[in-house]
Length: 125
Image (cartoon, rainbow, N blue to C red; front, top):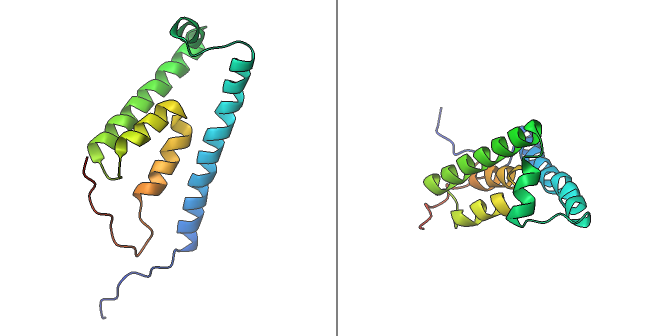
């Protein structure tokens, strides 16, 4: 059997995977921001004296806040350590500025080259 290079055509499974990640990213951008905009419309603020007490309004919101911020910190550490994309710090800013649920699927899309494409060159900080 001769060695043949991988096909550059994306398989249906790969297309579905990429579409699922795009859908998750879209949902991760839209759904949380519906509630963020409601928060701001009702007089909410990102000022620490307003924001942080609201994130700890009860045990459930405290648990969710801690979980999301720890996951975002782990994602940030992973992106900065791995350095598999150009300008990794932009992904970290996006994670904390837009949201982990939006940025993480986009990051996964960006770091995985299309099947058959040459691997990306290592990025330089």
